Length: 225
Image (cartoon, rainbow, N blue to C red; front, side, top):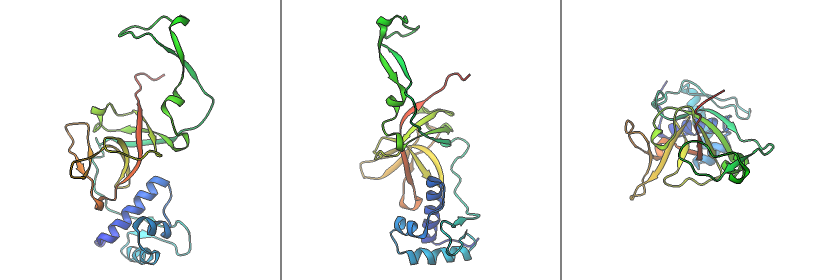
């Protein structure tokens, strides 16, 4: 495969990111809007990428852009915290469980009614925007210092605007990964690991990073049936 120009690399990254996020390839118009260029320029680049063997595209057929044999930078797949499963939040019947007011360091409060402070529905407690909320299961150890361990389920809200300090799910090299977003005093953005074995990564425009959603909660299982 021939070497790509910077413009072609950005186009390929946008195709990868869009396909990962939406589960389908983008249209030429959508790529033009994402890259802030004319649709004719996108079409021209797509034809050149077809010649280079980077992608397939059927003329006149919607969402027919397919990347083939694209070399990607390896993203520490063995241990970097990444998404392995993704599920949409569903609205169903409420399940309210008793919330005990007793605070005990060990043991469990008496089930007597005097101790019950209220009824708690975890759906309401964990999910503020159901239509924009997803559950993802993660793998990897780069975020264990933030209490995120392999196998944990994260609650991700895509309606929230990411802020410095938030833990986010981001699209990096077409893969959904979990990182902490931080902005330094100079205004530079970084992905900060929560594990001393990993180094911070500065976010540059060339990386084509997309913030997919903000992590609001983590669910850790101690025992399965």
